Length: 349
Image (cartoon, rainbow, N blue to C red; front, top):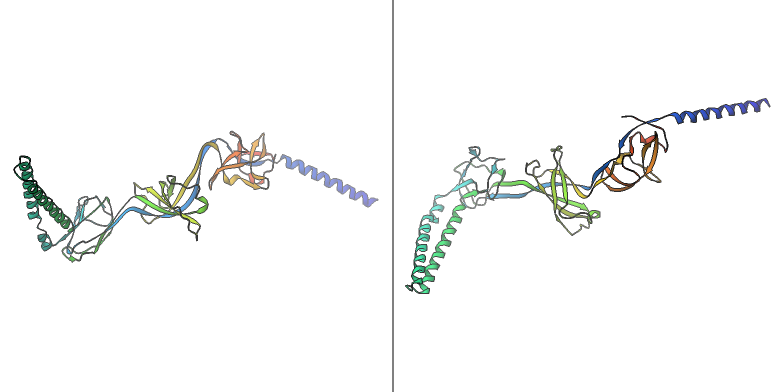
């Protein structure tokens, strides 16, 4: 009997301690940080990567053989060099060949054109007065046209003696040769790029084919320009799907007016496929995944209230909540990991 009494006493004491423990737990407040839920905006995007290339690029070759002469850049007063900006029509390299130039006979062809033009004009006047036949008029016109073709052909041949920039751009490759040295026809002399507009080829997963369309905006980023984001546009889409990679191709056109991106750079793109304003947006990292669904906590009268939420738009960092939360509620952003429904909380900064 004495032993039974001792056991009963121990049981009573332990039960009393458990009750005190429960009462003590009820008084513990979990420190949490909160944010006020307010309307916000959200963009849903697809992340991708690619290498940028210039829209305009040309390698100019010598069209004839001749003595090499590198011209001076008017902007620097020095011979053209790598990295120089060149305006369209600028003469960069000159090839000199007296024999070639003499054989063109540009001066005599110009005089012949002038004379044939005068004769044709005179024949037109005489024909109007009945002074010449239609056949004579037409023959003079043929002479004028042939002279014009001969002169224009000579100008084309003369232009082959000069390497001229076909568009505004930057010199990215230049073959240096001592002035006066004779070079052969067909030698690559200069490469010119205009990278104020760039292209980026993308390979996109086939699962995204229904949400990607021409005209969609793309944010372009690169580790060398962390504080600047450029804007691109989906300009081309391939309808074909690669059976090996299960992907399809897209081309992004990028405005690069300040030349922040360089041709050949590796860039990250975010294709914006949907957006919404004036909606509830919360960080993804405060959402708990439970059997009942995606869960967050709000604060009501000093207690944590568990809420099961439904997603709308989302991106890697944020999600739109279309049910489960209300504007102006206080959402727990820190300290939520140990919370349970109706846990006492203390809001801290």
